[in-house]
Image (cartoon, rainbow over all chains, first blue to last red; front, side, top):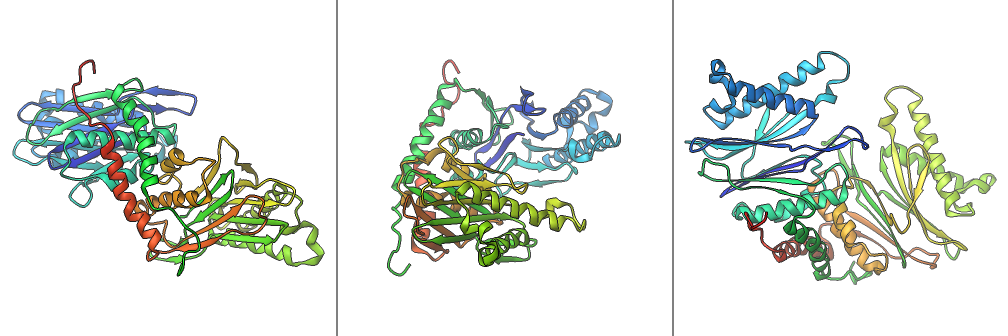
Length: 248
Length: 248
């Protein structure tokens, strides 16, 4: 499994992904699920992947080879006129890879599923964030649905729902996502450290800071240990339950 | 879907269940998923159910009819010599119902699955808590796994993992479970109010307090609204993230 989140803020985009991949519980590896591309001053793209690793890696390789082939430059990942067209290209490539693999008929096509979160900005447009489905179609984040999660999204969702604020600085969003990831990692073996984070600041048209957090990272340790204590204090701050209250 | 939790404490057992049941998103009803039985001074049992409603209701009806038939009193729910034997009877009955329904071959047997959390105490024994699977087998709670969740368990798990304490009073456990349920209800439509709670105090051999919380309940409102603020304060109490720290 996997856990990835892309967050749309007034001040930019924040992406976070875990790195655990497994073929059965006894075959676990570390693989990044975050890829970025940039043409400084023109565009920045970040892609987070979940699902079958062969599918998502093939999709990314095809997207990159299209970047490199001069004859196909018109249809390349970095030559799309808009984020919408970029999402469309990623979706079409993903669907193509899944169809090709499923064609052998060896397994149900469900085995080869994958999905992406794509975010970025192209000069002249706004920062945009998309969730791309295995069928190749996609939805876009907006004020009503300002973040997307893929993979093991349930454990870490309550804290996002309650604490996300579109006005928050990107540094606070990194802190929020670390709490969401730490809650997930503590509850589910299929999501694991290290964690990759990538920030993009609106209108910068260049990659913002990127960092990898492992279990020795002093800031990650402070968040992970501190959150247990902070949650306990928060819990204690709520009024006590008294059974058989009058009128209950 | 459903969300039910049974919690084992030094001072007793606490059970909580939602009441939403649905046959598709356009057909939603309220049905309790919590049943209790008691023979004061001798035994107390509480059963929480998840899964196909026809399956779990049939199982409970069969268990109750066996209670009522004098000729079968030896094998009845309230005549078992131990909590282990009670769990075995519930598991056997559940498996029997699923097998019978699946026999028609109209649908895969997965459609008729159900599971239970069973807790209680019989005079001469300790309070015990079991999770019963559709196959009829079961596992027991203990110091390493002091609570069971069935249904939509992921959203509400992080707060249980971080805040549960076997020494906590039953009233604090009710508060903790309300937070866990509220987080789930805010994230997933398939779990809904009202919420039923049942407490059992160790060696009382009689049902403890029972209450139903709906969205007009003043204590539930305090918890639900207060938890958002408490979480935000907890989040703010964590150290801020500063990118590009020396040595990072």
